[in-house]
Image (cartoon, rainbow, N blue to C red; front, side, top):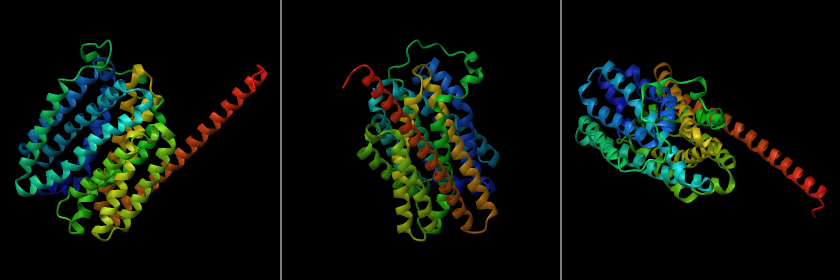
Length: 382
């Protein structure tokens, strides 16, 4: 709800040069907290971690109107990141617990469907509240929604078997508890993909203003609606054809969306870019999550999900910092175009990596099939 309005809000507080930190600080805390949330998700339980994330959203949304200095605002953004550092990790592990492996892609697509509904409505409603009422009303409304989510979470059954009570010793991490090596391929892909998200979150409000689009949240609404439609129509695709082929195509579409944003010089191009961008993430997000679940060990699924989300936060944070630097150091629209160009190049690198993994997997499968045929012949089978 609040993201589209925060750059202008921080500028009014006198912190225009810190616009890149709006997202960067948030994602920094989220990324740092991921290993801890992964461990606690695998020990204390999925539901308590989800509830903690929503509680942070509730508290921070309530406090924004009272911290009216640049330092206070940025400190709150840093704390607010704990919400994203905890809840999605536990949510993804919870969903993976309750669905069969051969329907994970579909299930993650449905999870993403409801996420997309919130993301499509939130920015537009937030901008409307800020414009027609006040920023404070927008902040408090977001806080109220977080409180509602806590009420729902407290009614959900725990899916983790053999839960432990929380104790502070759980916050001491061993080296092998920080990063799940099984999730390395999704980590690399999502890191490269999510740079574009940091760029979008940082610069799209400026692009909206330059084109005369007064509601800065509408780009987010259009792209999340497009992603919602893709999730509904193609939710079973990665279960049927495999994670890598789907990610190869959807990441290529992500690169195309960045090119379209560079070419944008009218509202028509702007909305077209939003639709294409949404289409790419409509397939990327649930497929990467299902892929991570596939590669994870059931006992450390929370850690694997946390590793994946570290990549998401790192990519978004780097994208936000890069875009913020370019906005402050490159004159005019060239800085915005350069941000989109870097995002497009990184997406193409991800396409190349996915293509290599895909071909490697096909070669291994072909070799295993040939070995099975040879063994059948030796055993006298036709």
